[in-house]
Figure 1 (cartoon, rainbow, N blue to C red):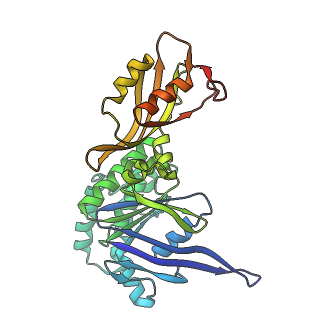
Figure 2 (figure 1 turned 120 degrees about the vertical axis):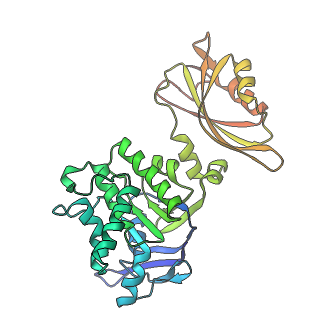
Figure 3 (figure 1 turned 90 degrees about the vertical axis):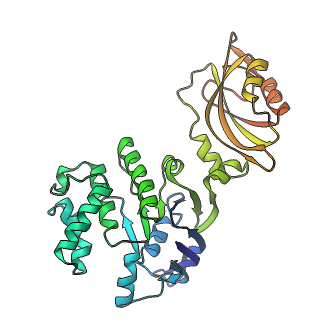
Amino acid sequence: MIEIKNLSKNYTLADGSVARILKNINLTVPDRSITAIVGPSGAGKSTLSKLISLLERPSEGSILVNGKDLSHLSGESLRAERRAIGTIFQSSALLHRKTAAQNIALPLEYLGVVKSDIEKRVKELLDAVGLPDKGNYYPSQLSGGQQQRIGIARALALHPQVILSDEATSGLDPQSTQTILRLLKKLRDEFELSIILITHEMDVVRNVADSIAAIRDGKIVEQGRVQDLVANPSSDIGRQLISLRVADAFNKRHLVAELTYGGNVPSNWSQILSKQLNAIVHLLGANIEQIGGGNLYGRALVGFEFLHTDRVDITAVGNALSHIGLHAEFKNNADFNENERRVAV
C-alpha cells in the first residue's frame, strides 16, 4: 500500500519568488488496487510523478510504502528503498543496443545479483508480460506495445510493492493500449501491487481504474471509487466517464440523453419509456447500483430512436422521464437544436 500525506512541492523562481506547484495532496492506494490520477496539462501530474518515484523531494508531507516513510531518505537508504517503487515511462526507455532480456536484467545486474538468479527472474518476467519468446529480440525488432511490455517487466525486476505508470499508454494504438491495460490488471492481482496510473486518457481510466483522483492547479479536487463517482450526480469525473459513450455514430433519428438516477426508479423503465414515447431505447453506457434497500442510483447514457416520426417533443420526453424518477440532460449534436420545443431529429 502507498499513502501520500499532506504532500506539497515548492520551487524557487529566478526572481526569488516561490511557486507552489502541489498543495496538500492526500491519496491512498491499497494493495491490489489501481488509482488513476487525471488532470489537464499543467495541473501538477508530472511533478507528482517525480515525487512518488523519489526523483525529487517534497517540500512538505510524506510518501509511505507499507507504512514506511520514504520521502526524506537520502544516500544508500534512499537507493535501497526506491526499489519498492517501479516506474513505467511514457516511452519504454529501453536501451536499443541491448536485447529485451538484457534490458530487464539491468536493475538486477546493478545490484550484483548472481547470473543464475538473474536468468530465472528474467524468464519469469518475460512469461508474466506475455513475451516468453522475445528475450533475444532487440527493441527495434519489437512493436511499440511489445516494447512497453518489456518496460513493465523491467519495472517489476526488483519485486516492487508499488508501480507508477506515467502516461504508459500514450501514443500506443488502441489494440496495444488494451493489451497493456489487461496486463496491468493481471499484474495487480498476481503480484498484489498498488498501481498509480497517471494519464490524460479517460478511456484508459474507465477500463482499468478502481479509483480516480482529479488534480487541478496542484490540488486534488475530486477523488473516489469509480462506481461511486459515476453514481454521484454532482461528480464532474462521473459525468466525463459516462459521457464518453455519447455515440457520434448515432444518426439524426436518435436523441441522446444522460439520465441520472436519484431514488426509486422502476427496473423496467426502458420498456415504459419505449411504450410511452413510441421509441426504441438504446442503452449506450451505464453505471447503476442498488443502494439502501434496493433503490437504484447512478447514471445511464441512452439513445432514443423514434419510430414513425421525424419530429419529437423534447418537453414530452423530459416529462416522461421525470415521471418515473429520471433526470435527463440532452446531448446535442448538429441535428439537435435545444432552443426549439419541437425539434426534427
